[in-house]
Image (cartoon, rainbow, N blue to C red):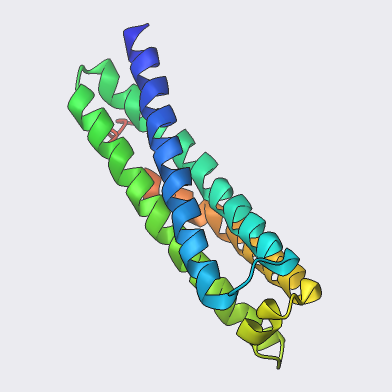
Length: 158
């Protein structure tokens, strides 16, 4: 029971930290595009958080599996270390995903995305949000496979 509670607390604390840091990154990023708050900015802000949450859910699942594996052998420090590493990797990949979505969105429109978002172009913000969330849904399984490969599961002899 202690291992499950420690697992839950680890995921809870790291999940909150991830969301707070992603929100701060999102605010910093949107302030470069939008000087005054508008609907397009809020749509983009929400899209970033949704796409990040897709990665966050996947990361929490993998970290929980790693925690169970390490805690079965009383390697509590390894469990916490792996969880932290997975959440940091997820955060870095989410930032890469967000920046990639700007690249993809710029290929889909001839307008200056910075100017259009500043002028409250809701259609562009929705399109960008769809691209961002789609990229997260497309890539999260590959991301999961890479992260899972770091857990040192023992080979089964068969």
